[in-house]
Image 1: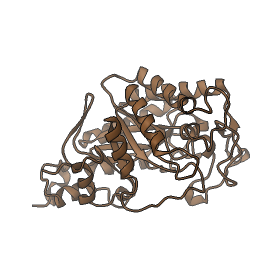
Image 2 (image 1 turned 60 degrees about the horizontal axis):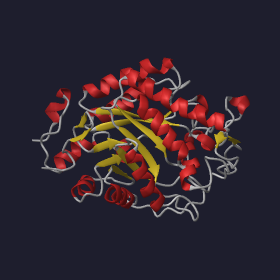
Image 3 (image 1 turned 90 degrees about the horizontal axis):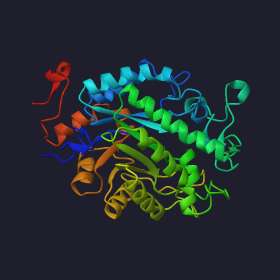
Image 4 (image 1 turned 30 degrees about the vertical axis):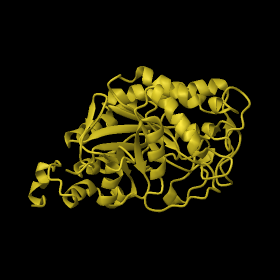
Length: 356
């Protein structure tokens, strides 16, 4: 039997297989509202057989959006559209999760296909927030340093977003603490230059994430799992390291986090990433072996045998796929056929195309 297609129990939730649709920004919402694009995009990956489907980074506040067209969950009006998506995805036999995010200093920019760059306030942009007034680079806005009051507001926003996620029907939440967005900006000394209780030492730089995890977990049902996505390294001298990530993962496990989604980079423009097939898998393996927490591997994982090997060899408990699932929404169905695993669920409407 294929190990990639074995179920995985996370608290009270059972995933049908180990394939996860990684959060992928679509930049297709207005005022944070989900629409038919999100339904079809996420629904297609559920029809394609993924065990768990994540929404894109979903902003916990208007200021937390990357672009003016990010998905949002900062107000109750967002709940109904998300509930529609949750219901459809789950009806296809997949579980669905939501990634809660705040972009910090990488906020208020145009969509990639519109060239990126700052959206000024007179064009619908907004002031950007960060642990310290240090811009990402010249193409991003100059951030305003968060006050301690502002930090408490961010924590409250994550907690409120998790409550709305529960009301929308989600049973899995992921906190986005990677890719150079707000929480990652606090974690790394390259972007966090503070001299208060949120800056300086490792304990201080991790304080915001710990407070957010505690706030989310306190209102999140005990039977529902909590993921955290981290950048395991900044790929830059003097920045966040794999050793830091291992230490952080142990702390998160003690606070009720169930899975560490192991990505990397995104904090500084001068990072040096040796990208290649499975280039981030070592982080998943190291964190898993050192702490015993469940991990997910992500990064240029493109074929069935590669994904199967990650599970069989104990390098990860889940395989997160991103671009490969943009190219092929039905990758899980195709992978099951390649690995000769006949038990995967096919939609009744597609049964006649199932390989013999």
